[in-house]
Length: 494
Ligand code: HEM
View 1 (cartoon, rainbow, N blue to C red):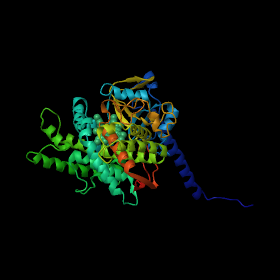
View 2 (cartoon, rainbow, N blue to C red):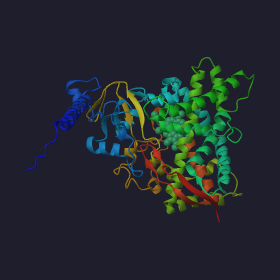
View 3 (cartoon, rainbow, N blue to C red):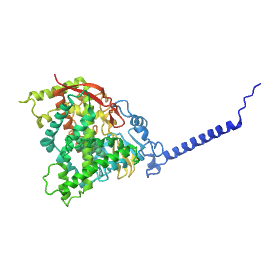
View 4 (cartoon, rainbow, N blue to C red):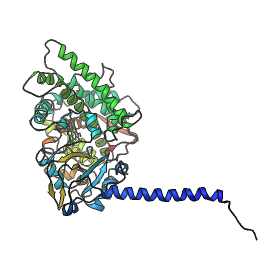
């Protein structure tokens, strides 16, 4: 008989390893249980039972990894979808090292915006604040916040849009489209980002992309990636790259500000001049750091979001010939009514673009450019049977409402006609449509963004046609991304 005897010296290390693994797994399990059952919220007893349901995920990283998992298309990302099914629209989680209460509920979202600076207050994670600056408009409250908004509206409010930006946008869009004509392929997201940056930076800081090194906007590229990363300032991390971009842009802005401050008298021509005038007004609380952080945010907020909106709208129209046809007819009809068909778009013509407006709203609903916003509760808030304790950090997610089949029939379909006859959110927001946020902090550039998309579409469909070369896939992660870009070839209209 043959006995299979394995030497003890061989078996022992394996047994020891097995034992250590079992103990380690048990320890991790216990730590996880403890982490998840411990609560950062200062409520006890019956009140603790009324906290929204949820878990804290893994220690330190929480649920962050799952949060960034992609949706296969423009559908609700798995992170929100799974929790909606499991907990409902209000739940607890932990992301980027922060314990959060998440609201995907239209009533709570609305309550947060309507009771801003009463029950809730602006709060953003550390990574975002370090990128936009501690003195950014998103850190300001009360009358000074309102003052900052009124300054921005001098540039992006209806009056200046009508008198200045409508013309500016048309010129830059026309020049850009013409320059794409002879190219075999244009990556639309990058090309429109550069175009929007030209429109915005001209009036903000008199920046001329064609004369300068032209790459200032590229410094903002890394910003999106770093915004929701862990604030780890170590070479190689997304956050580090992002902060390097900020440093570079801030250096340029600081130099411009210093030069202008030193210059004798200068007529006010751009937003930087307006800020300098405000700096000189002693009664206001404006200082150089606040002014620079505001410029930095406006340069970024304008081009990244609007270029995504344009690229996505063109892609959605490409895939929906019927919508493209109706849109084209609207713009052809505007041309036909003019004495000179090639004359500039007037304000009245812009305001008459009803179907275009439906297309823009429908695209914004689907693509969820700003899928999350943050606030903090300044009081205990009782809502929908839950308690949101004072001090809780809240993440608002409007995408779930935008993609709710009980509000929008067949919500994943691009259907601009659904807005026909319905009251589009005139002020820019409603409980069902929060692409631009709401309340006191409603996007101050929303009208400007919509104007630029409309002008772009007018110039595009009246003068050009296009072939898709490659790409065009759109995914949410949870922000909108174009993984392979969207490459088109622009051709003159026959
Ligand atoms: C499609 C384009 C855009 C989208 C989807 C968008 C979205 C948003 C959202 C959701 C908010 C609210 C954030 C919050 O409540 O925490 C916001 C705020 C803001 N947006 Fe936009 N935005 C767009 C374009 C622009 C443009 C073109 C500008 C200016 C050039 C701009 C400047 C700002 C500023 C300064 C704020 C902060 C307002 C405040 O704190 O009072 N945005 N935006």
